[in-house]
Image (cartoon, rainbow, N blue to C red; front, side):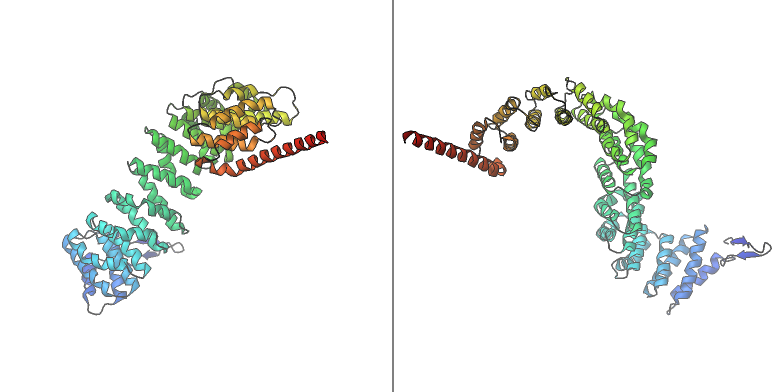
Length: 503
């Protein structure tokens, strides 16, 4: 017999408040369950009996196989009732009884009919019950309906499908993994409950060993940037991955964590991030440095404490790590002109080997030159020798960046400009379209006032028919017209002078 629920009254200690189910016995309730077989169903009476059955089940009362089967068959007859309250009780008792595979077939048709009903309450509950009692074979037949339910406009239906996915992930993970697109769409829902369940299901997918799926999970969580209330759901999994032996997991977990956490949690993982910056694996190190670039906008004081580790990253043999380390170190010091000048001065001596980092250094160098010019420092242009030396670099991207930097310097003289223009002219005859395009684009901007402009425009005319350079043709034609106009004006002046001499 189920134990009664007894509680002392707050106002009268000598009086007891008893549960309405006190004293009920399983045998008596099973006898009452025969009311389910009546020709005229009484919804209120049937609901009361189902409530008693649910109470017994939740109190740990055990039903024999015969008893559970008899109750189950009797309950299935209540699907004929149109009473919504009774229907909800029917869903509950079927889910709690967990019928065997032989018995499930009896209610499957009714539940699938309800799953396609126009009444959202029926649809939501039918989804929950079906996903608790069916096996993998039947699940594949209704998978399409479940994926549609996840993106349903009604949040109750969508939430029911997501919760069902959480349960099915334990028994049929391969099927649930195929719902990742729909779950991602569910996270964009305006319903708080749908968002919560979608994020919870996405978190459970972290347990998957499929690396491709794990990478997609990292991406969607990072892009969604969940609120502080939702972040706690995935934080433990991300921190576990951050200390994983699999470098791909570590790198992606660092990127995601640094995009979604606040300053309080950041201080807790700061030690791991500083270790990641100097990690031997370039993917992990680069991920930590890129995360630092993002964190510098929201938590600059914390990132500034990483200067020693970032400087060590600049000495890395990895081109990408060196590039990201230089970018982060410049961002940390960008408000200190003297510190930036010292950084550029130390790196222009040849410690940068990465072409990507070299391009960044060229940009920072040209910025230092402009700052010195703006602050009235006259005399020989500082660091110009470095820019000119980059014109002889083996990497074409570095050569182009150096040529562009020189042509954009304020007050550049023809002597300083000539080496850059010469290099760009050589690129005009390159077999690579991207180099020809870059050269033409740079020359278009910088030809005005250059004393060798007529010669360069002639070279531009030779490539004017290049199909890859059609975007630049308008500017080329304009400059060609200017040169022709100047030639005509010179001829007119010469002609007038000649006529004057004859007269």
